Image (cartoon, rainbow, N blue to C red; front, top):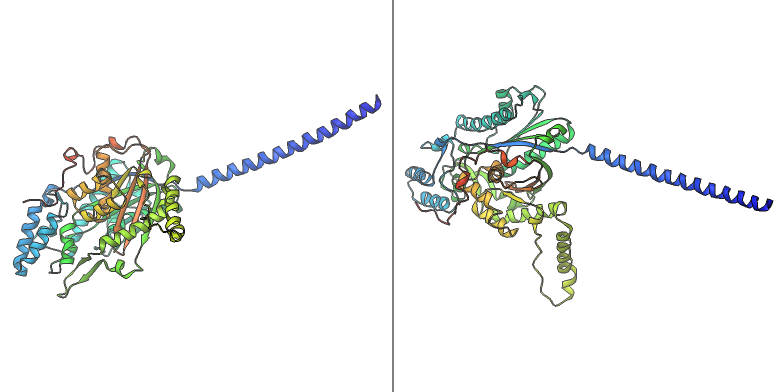
Length: 466
């Protein structure tokens, strides 16, 4: 009996030791789990969320409207100065095949005969555009100018002293410690470049508001020479601009429209053909303009492919990534050992990653090329084509006019992903992905399209008759 009790005592002793060890091990696992969870929460909270509170596109007054017929008439009047019909016929051919309609807007300087490209006219144009969108944003959201912490402006051709950023600060009375930047010479891709810069600043400076202003002064870039590659800019570029209000404050998530997911920037400037395909220069007579090379569509396609190669793994579902990887491996390593022909590169279905496309309205050929490259539908490129038709190429602000169109149509819903894509001199291709986080997006009826959105979309013929 005594030996049995001893046995039971030893048994319980060992059992208690095992339980104690297991308890210690469980506590260790629990401690590790808590540490990992807290670490994850800490890292997540450190990552700044960039919210797009609102944006506004410039709506020019009707007296700035220039129809296709008026443009051709102005071109004919300039023809007398050059004493040649070649220029007028060339510009007439370009404008009638451009995809632009009769509601685009021109600056006051370009309405004069001859055109006035003076600094006074250029500054008047940029002030008219930027002051309008800044006032609209600040008034709508009841924001004091002194609440703006970061200001980024961009305009490629017009780079005065003081800068455009300083001009806005002086007009609205921003704080003396506002962090201001002006980007010049970046072409039509500057809009997303400015967003990228503002994003980087907001990641560093907590609880801040950033204002991004994108525009281009077309009167300062009017070309009065004979070189056809430099006359294209006269035909395509029109008056416009946009203001974008960004925030990293948690409290602004409740009122924000979108959250920035990704920005991808691609620069092919190391290649001579890409560097020179959009180039400001003087012709043989010393007249300055921007030359658009015939290779610009090809270069844009190469830049797009490079950009999407970087963006794809960030946004595409795994099924599309695996298909792309399989086709790459097959063509690169397996096919050479077989007798089968090389397969065309697999183009992922980006419609599985994006719900809406805002492609830079640089020209009908560019939009059509991207539509074909990405296998998009007519509806996918509708916003960009209608932006080109009504507003023309407004340079760095064109993708914002496209987003205005989608909102006015009531197509953007909470959870939708909006893809912005633009191209610019250098040569650059930049893209941004936004996620809609508001249910109120389509209820905002005061944007640049709502006055006549019911008229769109319209059929855009290959040649517009006059």
